[in-house]
Image 1 (cartoon, helix red, strand yellow):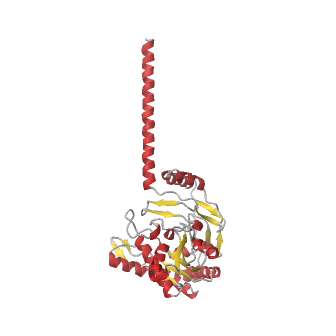
Image 2 (tube, helix red, strand yellow):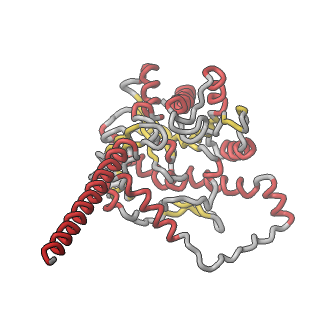
Image 3 (cartoon, helix red, strand yellow):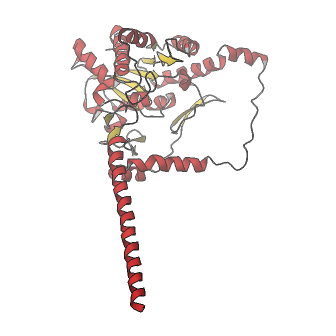
Length: 371
């Protein structure tokens, strides 16, 4: 009887051990599968380091970033926050600087297809191969306040800068008090002012380690979990009533008076930062699909007109790429935005959109004698 009990116990222990091994093996195989899928089909991670020369955080130079969620592309991170170029200070050519946010960062397309590289290519085709080029300064979350603080730095650092082109995809982004996932340069109201917040980004060491081991798939779920915890509210938030508006203020607001006042301040401040030509390039989301039809009218047309009016009064040209986008669609049936793995006509510029914006800038630079 004792031997039978020992035999039964032994068999139970072996069964438990075998079961545990099967579970562990299944878990490890599942983890390996997720790692393989994540390595090839998830965005890699970008992390930043502080650049003493520029006095700001930039993406770690030498990093290759893989983007898969919208488009499929790889971006090389060069020195001084410049994509696709190892060290922009080593090039003696005359230069156009393209400023922007994620639309200029352009993780969705490979380096040769980005706006500045397309500008350089088109300038070379016009006989400027050894004389002129372009480069971009832009990170996701950047704003006009960042360009305000950075323009003098890059003019001092990079030889032969000839003009600044600022890409704007939503004219409301040029107004104060815009929400942002990042905190660097800030445009604020009441009173109107441009200020800089030197706030070190969080979790950069963790992101680097995850990126080094190809564990990209861990970051987004972890970030979502942390965000969910922060968003928990156990006490209802008090709703603040908007301040009363006098009849005079109401009339001003109805004609974009508040926006024009903010733009006047912004342009005056920007003009103090540089003596070089400063040009805004408006790139609306046109054409786009609206209820099954193709819409070709910019919903922000009134705001763009007001923005352009104020800018022109301050000697700042405004280029509008709308007609170029629409003409391209009418000729080809293709959108300047959207990718095979995203919605057509939405999101960031695809390779066609990059080319069209580059053409607008090249045409202006050569027509106006900037180069």
